[in-house]
Image 1 (cartoon, one colour):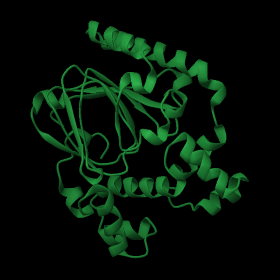
Image 2 (cartoon, one colour; image 1 turned 30 degrees about the vertical axis):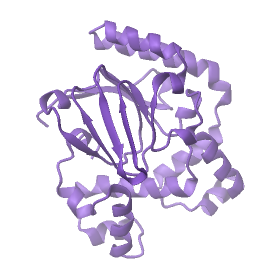
Image 3 (cartoon, helix red, strand yellow; image 1 turned 120 degrees about the vertical axis):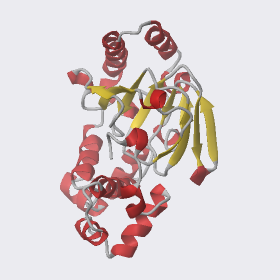
Amino acid sequence: MNWRYEEVKPEVKLSEVIECYWWEDYCRKNPDMTHHIVPDNSIELIFIRTPFYRVSPEFNRQWLVQSHLCGLKTRSQLCRVKDSPIISVRFKPKGLYLFTKTSPILTVDNCLELSNCFGTSILKLEEQLFETENQERRIELLNEFFESLYLQNEHKRDLLFEAIAEEIESKFGSASIEELSEKFGISTKTIQRRFLEHMGITPKKYSRLIRVIHCLRQSKRKKQLTQLAYESEYFDQSHFVKDIKSIIRCTPSHFSKSDKGIQAPTF
């Protein structure tokens, strides 16, 4: 890459539910570009001074915001941004429910203003982040803010739900809900309920999403489509291509050859 991308892990208490804090200078080097953003199993809290334009063609939605939360994506989005974010927080999908005041189901494939998700106290944090140019200090502020929220809500942690989400991820989406039910000794109905309550989508939809994202990450290794389909336990190549195209709006071969832009660190 000819641009900078950096990430820092959060404090230990937060590392199970927050992936990292990150920043980049891609948009400063490539201004006024429209970016094709595919699902990547992340939830992004973005702090930015300039307008950020997002479009979800699949759901006929569009947003013009500044600092915002971009919820878990199940379909591709388009975005245009003038400047790079000053810093961002990448939540693990299984962890957002511990911090937000909004039901996770309302965040999926959606873009929300800060106070709607975290209350008005986050506006003070945003102001502090904008006031300093020191990234180390910004990371300290983020750790302090989210550790405080975490300690307030730690008693709400659903460790069984989080373990099931981890199992889906470790199996790259191949485990059926019946298999998960048997392994964890919990009914399929209860698994469905907990996923909708804590993540906003069903475990079946999450498994499908994880499966597709895993395939997209493997495609950079220049594997043949038939090999990828076989390794991902698809019935055949046509089902594999159809499944991926329905989520990212292009074929896996087209995606593997395309410029990943601001998602290059992920794919």
